[in-house]
Amino acid sequence: MLLEVSGLSKNFGGLAAVSNVDLAVRQGEIRGIIGPNGSGKSTLFNLISGIYKPEPGARIVFDGADITNREPHEIARLGIARTFQLLRIFGQMTALENLLIGYHPHIRYGIGPAMVGALGMWTEERRVRDEMMELLAFIGLAEYADMPAGEL
Ligand SMILES: Nc1ncnc2c1ncn2[C@@H]1O[C@H](COP(=O)(O)OP(=O)(O)O)[C@@H](O)[C@H]1O
Ligand SMILES: [Mg+2]
Image 1 (tube, protein in one colour):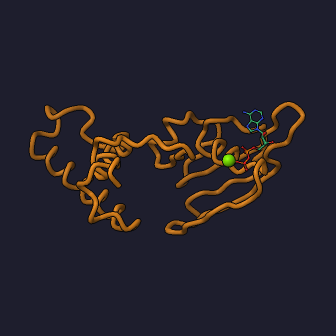
Image 2: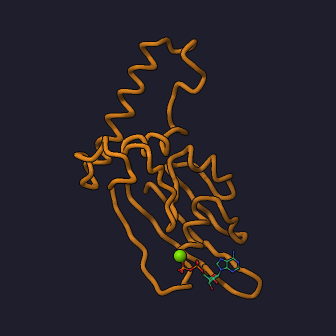
């Protein structure tokens, strides 16, 4: 399993927003979660991404790492991120550039060109661009990669 959650709960005062949830997601699977307003969907994602801390007894394991109670930026670095209902798109930047910005925590030349050299940096940038183009193709936007996002 890529993601395994067990015994996940969150209370807001006397309100049990998420109550003893277990779930598992395999690598390559795409899952959705549905439910009426107020049923705890957003809270569930806020717990998995570390924005809220769960009640004691929960366990969240991602790709073999226990991420229960880890900070959101650490969880994002490992590869789990959430997006929001009210998106913040950079309208003047292209669709591809918007994805590149979202990807910045995963770029490997963070310590600078001095360590990897110009060639290493170029190779890494190519690799990331190729990967972002695959994502755009997956959602049917590859042909709009260079269009300002505000014009889509
Ligand atoms: N930060 C919070 N403080 C207090 N109550 C909250 C908070 N976030 C969510 N809730 C409550 O928890 C319940 C689940 O909310 P939420 O997870 O946003 O549901 P959904 O995303 O399924 O609409 C609701 O009753 C909501 O009012
Ligand atoms: Mg919600």
